[in-house]
Length: 303
Ligand code: TA6
Image 1 (spheres, rainbow, N blue to C red):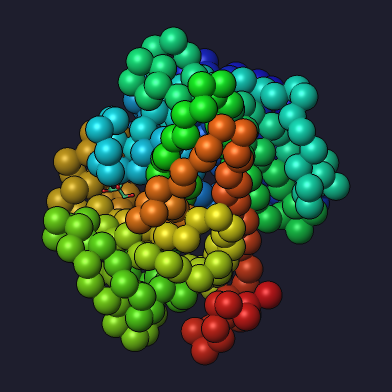
Image 2 (image 1 turned 90 degrees about the vertical axis):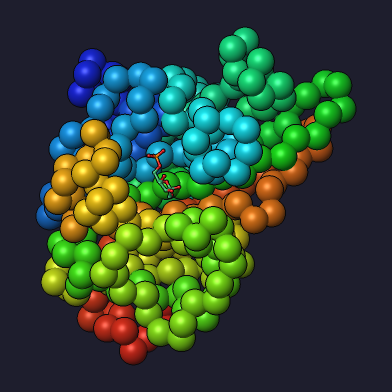
């Protein structure tokens, strides 16, 4: 249901019959909560997050559009996360998850202001849905609605902040051996080593041509997040660690220990749409007991 959230900003609360829930602010179409049927919060939102436009909320799932990071001449991560979205009463039926009851459709279209900095006409529809099993699905549809025949290109990410008990006990499987651009080394290209990722310092890597499934294993909580994606070939892995954490006013000094960003993205090859064309980018998040993926299993096969 629609209600007032932090800072007086409006948010939609989704509840599933079995007790799972999610929250999405109309500001930024920003998911800030995803709880399992035990009421445990699975996403990280900083205790110092600022819920006041034009600042983006620190945590949850910021939508990076029409630009990821500094890959272009717009502000960092574009402007979709800094805009007020509307509830889309007449969204077209989304195939596949229309059988779910707990979902909301949001829409963003360009304002006068935005058309000055990004002169393209588009409709960006986002559906946030909870499945009966408690998975969280975000489906983005971007359509080029320009009448003047102009194509446009954009880069995109679901900048998901996962809540973890202790970053030094977390492993990521599915990105081994892949090439990545290291954002800490001037985006130079490297190849990842052959086994699961572990974390002992700042990391900011853009993995290229990644598989459709990535597993984030929280050893202490005996919990594995499985991120499944479509239309999003790249994946960003980010933890600011201590120095960068201290430098962020909207991030607690110690909070880097309890979060990891794994971001389904389209960065290396911008998405190009001709008039009338539509792109779909989907991510499905599950949280499963780690007995299913104790590190021996290939995340591509998990569940
Ligand atoms: O996704 C990783 C990243 O691009 C990092 O370089 C860091 O800047 C992070 O995003 C957070 O960006 P933000 O603009 O939300 O502070």
